[in-house]
Image (cartoon, rainbow, N blue to C red):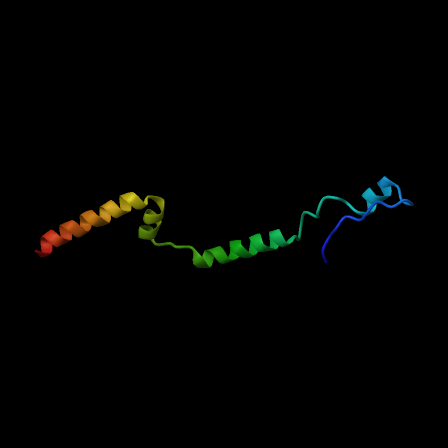
Length: 79
């Protein structure tokens, strides 16, 4: 059901409108609350617990330089 504000009525006073049709949406049970709860529950399934991926996300430039250094050292050892 889509909520909407009704047009002013000639027979009803403003206070009657305010009492029967509040302008603020209800605070609990909204679709936003439902989606937030659903995403919060699903987040535990998709969180990445790998420390290497976490380091790449936090500082990608540093991680790239470390990987290049490790690759260079490995190439020297193989040669």
